[in-house]
Length: 515
Image (cartoon, rainbow, N blue to C red; front, top):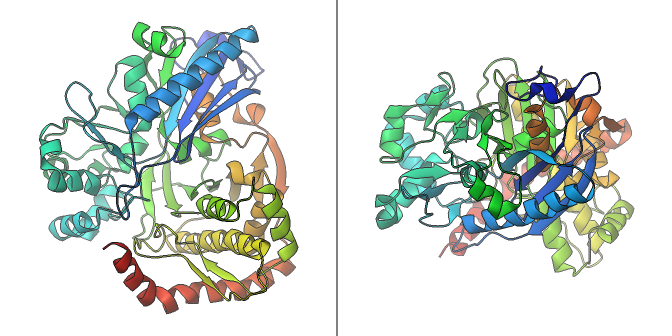
């Protein structure tokens, strides 16, 4: 159910009129790239408890990122048990469950729902370049964009299914079903097999964004033999926790579970960024941008998708790394946490004492769509410090955001409000740099934990009317500083030129890395 909507079917009478409260607590769990996060949220939207389980993707080869579905379920059960116990200690009953996860991912199972191999992750996994080229030659790039809203890229699920069919035919012969993290949790909790419309719209070229349904002719060519799941909207009920699911998780049997969606879209819902003209910036392991548009827009350099809520459309972008680079630097410097590096980066100042970074450490998704792009650090001298390097990484992300926004505007986007969310909003420096580089103000809500909170918000919508403004009001607005924006303009021009000037070299190096 959309936030601010009227109560839906079932237990709508559980709403507390005029308060935005629902009867009972809700749990939201998100399966992310580097961790699974769970939240326990009270009837008024208050964040009562959080819980985290850290993990790391497997990297079996160059450009490959995978994860075992057993990790998803094991960590969900641990988080659910911990948060359900916390609810009991507070005298609350868990009344509904929200789920989300990174995506689009490709987990193939047999007819008994036994995973046949680890899941292939979203656009950070770049193994399907050959399949993209083959499918494009066969179907035609213009036809794919017209029907599916997006060009084929390493973000798309379809070519990854084709990769398994071509490279692992013995596995594929047994494959019958397609799951993503959120739909896998739904299956284990409720016994039902379904997927949300938004996740399906990232399964290019299997989904028709005009018909809002799977496109059978192309699905039969790209994913033959796969029983594609029935579709529902993210906030709609997927079913109820079964007795088996209750025994595994500690959740009460019979409570509703939402259909769920991809983490970035759940993040947008958590901060109310789903109105026409809204732009969500997600500060996480990757930087994600979601712009809600009044009618379908397409761009070969961005992703046109259906939204998480009925009747909504998005033009979206995603960088392959952002927080991943700062984490890399933290580990490289053996720093205990980010706080000291953020302090040093603030002292470094605009331009990082003459350093410029390209943040393409895992290739780049939008708007370059270049899996062979690589990170570059230009201007290094013996006098540069940890703070300079960390500052250069933060500025590189901001330049990448600006690049995406320019492409979005060229495609017809009209940004009227920017809302920031994610772990990177906790310190003031990163969001301030992005506002200074882009010239745009950003709202930061009281709760910025993101997708798990968005899942909890949608779960509460199954119980009664919920207002995102009441649950999660604006905490602050980060405004750009014009004098800083002018200084960043020149650095941004250098940033754009650096990719062009170094691309031949880094592409050759990427070829050496894949040998």
